[in-house]
Amino acid sequence: MFERNPECIKVLGKDGSLLDINPAGLSFLEAESILEVRTHGLSNFVLPAYQSGFSELLLRAKAGASGVLEFEIRGLRGGHRWLETHVTPLSDGDGEVTMILTVTRDITAAKVDGAARQAAESALRISDVALESISQGVIIAAPDRRILSVNSAFSKITGYSGSEVVGRTCRFMQGLLTDPQTVVRIRERVQMFMEFSGEIVNYRKDGRPFWNELTISPVFDDAGVATHFIGITRDVTARKQADHALRESEAPLRLGARGGDLGVWDWNVPGGTLRVNERWLTMLGLEPHALTPSIDSWHALVHTEDMSKLSQNMEALRSPLENQIDVEVRAQHRQGHWIWIHVVGSVVERGPEGIFDPRCRHPYRHHGPQTRAGRTGSRRRGAGRKRSAGAHATAPDTRRGRGLLDYLRYRPMYRPCVRRLAAARRLCHRRTAWAAPRAATRR
Image (tube, rainbow, N blue to C red; front, side, top):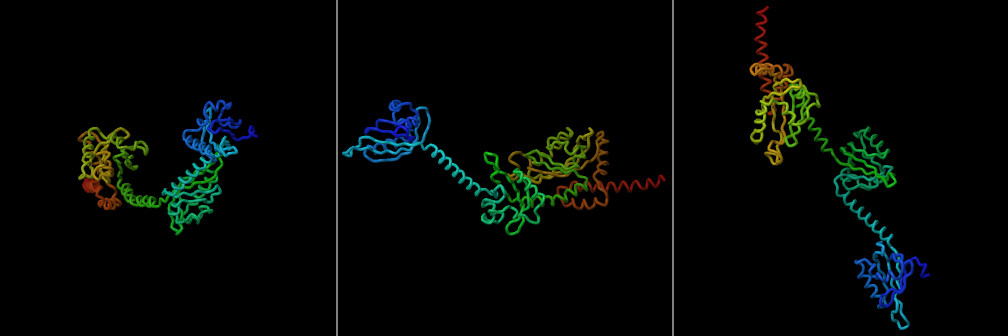
């Protein structure tokens, strides 16, 4: 019984010395014989953190009291084990303790499982706290798409409590404005256990629609089997409304730019990015993607003799008292010749510091139109051609030109352009009136 017992059995003397140990005990301590154990010292197998408890247990046993202790040991070969030891004192007829019997079992597996369980429970608690603290709605669903749980942000966005949605699919949030094609895409991606990301119109509990930025991701176990779906929902209605309002406000400007044959540009100073419309590119003979969208690529097209003039106008915008730029420069056409460009701009936004952006000494952003004024020749002939060609290039026809001028006249940033368009029209009318009598005389 002593030799075959799977648990470690030790017999200690009254002074705590090792008298006997069974083979299972030698295996726990990774020793070949009882001599190795005695040489190493029984208490030296116990890790330092538990040695005081082990010593107290032996002292209580010598005094005639039983006890139990859990501790960790390191064997002679370096292996670590968790052990649970039960200590019982053995007394003679007079009640005096003569020996101490210890029965020890290996609880390493239970300790590891318990630690893993505690870690999993701790991670789960952290996950629950994280889910409740984020602003996005979170939905956890089973493979059949039925909802298992939602966080408080989901309830705040939709108006539905967790008890009202558990066990249901998300179809209850669909309505008249929900795009059927988007619903089909979601269903197809989910059936194939693939991720979905997109926007869809859903409905709150009170019937109000909202734009939902939705992401659905499948969760797989170690065997590659889908166990859950996690959905992240975010209310982006305010952003969609702002985008719609911006498009509505820019529609008259785009109409006016097309009617007035204007190239429109928008320069973001900190980033150096430049956005232009199609007419701006066609003035220079460029294709839609032929120009790198940056202010440096535009400056590379400007004539070297005009760069100082353009730079001076740009430098003036550093002053908070100066918000507009109005300059004529030569720019190189794609075919190699030079054309005159009338550049008009206005600062529309300054940096967060109020006057200047802290990252640069220029205004944060400005934009405006530009018109083509003609092709250059010699200095004297080019100036004349610039004026005459400018009259024909910038003046729209009579029927739609008047409405355009009336519209642009009340936009401060376009007033210089309006003055040039009006002057060009008057010049056209005078030339027409002057040419008609001469044509009659020749006849």
